[in-house]
Length: 412
Image (cartoon, rainbow, N blue to C red; front, side):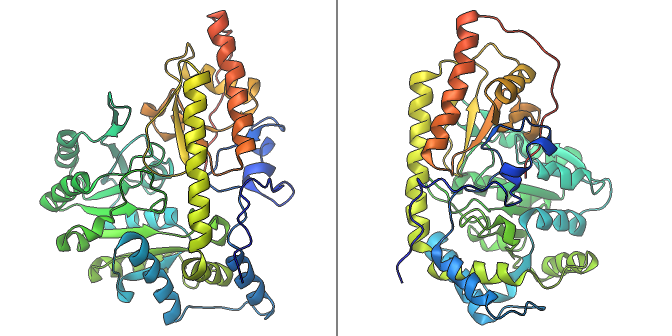
């Protein structure tokens, strides 16, 4: 049966489905009529093979405790080998309801209360939350935006932060959210060698690993045998196949002792079997989803190119940061006359857009906005046209009316 869900221009009405992206604007402090391009899920129907697998499973009518067999692992391992040239072993695999939960379990497993955990801001905000909420201390090796319009690592600062704060755990985000950086093998090696030198465990969130536009994604643990012993590699089909609501992630921990400590935290949290339909969806995605994935990838790539062209031609003072991965576009508004609070206010209340304020990713994200472009192009055009309206207003007037600051709205 051929793949059916390949019309990515189709606008699917998600309202009335308890959709976090569309149905909770007012509850999240937004105007009712905002256009949402914030949370990192897609507005595309997933692969029809996944649909069919879920429908077939539901016909059985019984949804008791379920686990997976050998064929599940073979599907996951096959995807990792085909797309990332990484050969995984079955005894490395643990499954969790999500990558954020895995980050929290790692923080609890490998650090003690009061310990410092290293991250690289501006970064996906749950990185900070799972550290702070578990009584640990956030230490950031901030990425910096270079003259080439890309984010870079300050390696001297990286090592200094490890030494000065006695860091034993590093949460790596690669591909990086929100900057879109796909770290090179050389960059990963420099960080990895420093972590080996100072006894730092690396939790690598690679959930966006299937979205790379320039270069290629390198699995951190694949670089050196020694890295396997310090690595927790977090993957999931949720971004790639729009399955976030299915709550399924595949976590690879080659080191037996690290895996045992991680598993103990899962058990302490009461987590055992996962959502049966999530398991079915993940297996179907990795077995039969290549055609849909490749077509979706091509469409999103064209969306990103469209955004870059539109901004370049129509939005002076705004720059698209040159990201190499993810379907999230990081816009730099610092060339306009707006401070961060005024920018947020105008985006929400004047343009009626629900996108992600850069401030939620850390202090270094202020003055930026993150847009999810995994949506039909008509929606992207509408979003950019709305930004053009407020941006031109500022340019033409040269001034703007300050209003009270608004609270930024978090994303998931």
